[in-house]
Image 1: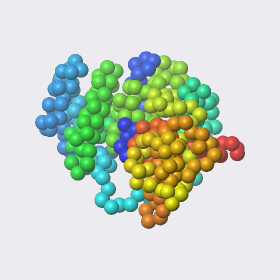
Image 2: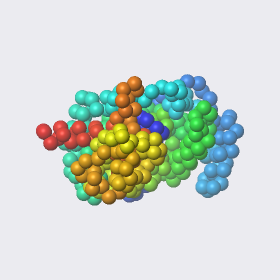
Image 3: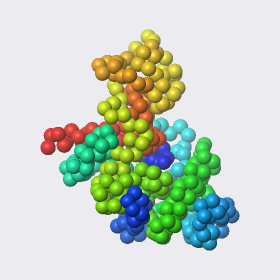
Image 4: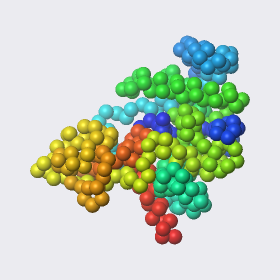
Length: 361
């Protein structure tokens, strides 16, 4: 899980290659050949009482061999990179949309996105037709997540998930909930690995345990990864076609509405502006067009005909004025991939910028 808030990535967000047919198969892909990042210190979870208690409970609930589960979790090491990755920044550190955007809307990623689109045009067109998800959005996600497969992560997924399951930093405001989330992800990974016979310690990914080109967490892999190239296995590390179909399937499952924009331009009538009320729901679409306008927002053109709910999305620019857009239900769907409005806008704008290049080529 990958940029911005924690993924389900996310998920922001290692290496499952499936051999369960046709929907779930697991095998080692080429990324597993890289040397994994080592923990800063060799603290193993075999000596962690809560981890071993979890192993026993998991084995009982899932009908797994207790010795095998204990061995897998016991071999995991505490990964300091995971601790650093989820630790909140210092209080008062300003957000900066312009700086964040510049990390992704830049020449290298744009050129790579153009090549990816040209090489996989057929799969993108088919995914858009079958799922209603624009090719530009799919291209944007894969580009932001891993630069089209170049950076899928080199941390052991077992280390990352175990660390965040049992040693999630207490300074985080949602430490208990996040720890529970990663325990669930660890359970999903071990259950899948046991069914397929793969050694889960060979799998590599992000500091948060996200895997493959689209950086799916284990639960997302199980629920949303699909065989889109028709070879009876799912491969999100070596099959861009499967990646394309799986990303489209993910958005469709979270309620993507075909043909609806992700956002509209918005400005304000300062004489009527009730900014606090407009920002209160955060990015959750909560206002009809009429109620949005009544609180001082100004919309034009097709935005005035929008039939669903809207949210006022604020993107802070450090000491400069914030950027605002009127987010639709589809904008909210994009944030289900990574719970961050900054991430969502980067994905959207990267995909649109690549689309412009494709049209001009």
